[in-house]
Image (cartoon, rainbow, N blue to C red; front, side, top):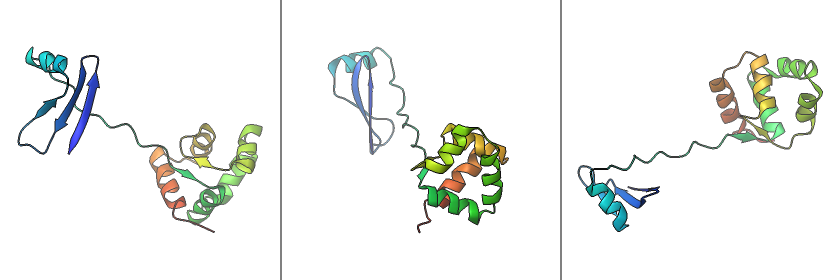
Length: 125
């Protein structure tokens, strides 16, 4: 497996298929920088994108988890923006502020919300 690392010094490719730590340096400036005793930082993949669900999927997951009545009551008691999002959204996104506020009102953690969206993605009308 290879990872690409780039910084102000240039570009390097980390080849993890070789025993030990191997660096294949593509840029002579990076090669010189490493020769001075510097070590490129390990590759850190970007975070996964937030999960999404259609309104049907999200609401069906709430039904399956026994949370639909609580959720609709929380929405009815919420501000107009939350009510509008509940009624009109074409997609629910797990880290959307409206979803975060609503699920917090239901006492759910970030992990609970993620699991709810994972379930939602398996449901289709």
